[in-house]
Amino acid sequence: MANCALCEPTSQDVLWQDDFCRVVLLNDADYPAYCRVELLAHVKEMTDLPPADRARTMRVVFGVEAALRETMQPDKINLASLGNKTPHMHWHVIPRFESDKHFPNSHWGEAVRDSQVQPLSKAVRDQLQRVVAERVECALES
Ligand SMILES: [Zn+2]
Image: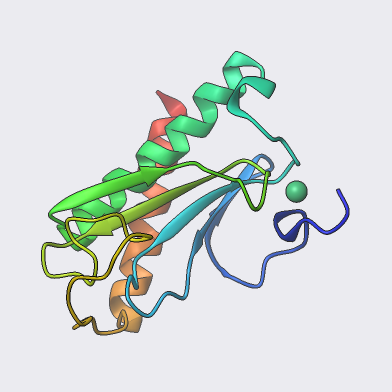
C-alpha cells in the first residue's frame, strides 16, 4: 500500500523476524523496552487474517510479552492494537512500571510525573533479543 510506513523496510531495531512478522524495539526515550509486533503484509484487521494467522500473530505477541516480563520485570504489560493512523496490523507490547511517566494512565494518556528512565544498556538489549527469540519460537511451536 502506498504511503504506509509499516509496508516499508523498517528503520527500527529488529529483535526477531520470520516470513510473517517482525518484532521491533522502538527507540522510545520514556519506554526503552517498548516493542511492537508488525505483520509484514498490509492487513488492516485481525479478522482479515485466516484463523491460523490470527493465532500465529497472538503467539508472537504473547511470546514478546513473556520475554518482556522475564527480562524487565514490569509492574504491568500493556497490549494494544489501534492502527487508526497506520491501518497495518501491529501490536504494541509495552512494559509498564508504577514509576513511569504516565502510570497508571495509558502511555498515550496524560503524563503524571517526569520520566526517570535510563536507556537500555547493550547487555539488556541483547538479553531481550535473545529471550524474545526463545519465547517467540517456543510459542510458535506450541
Ligand atoms: Zn502497510
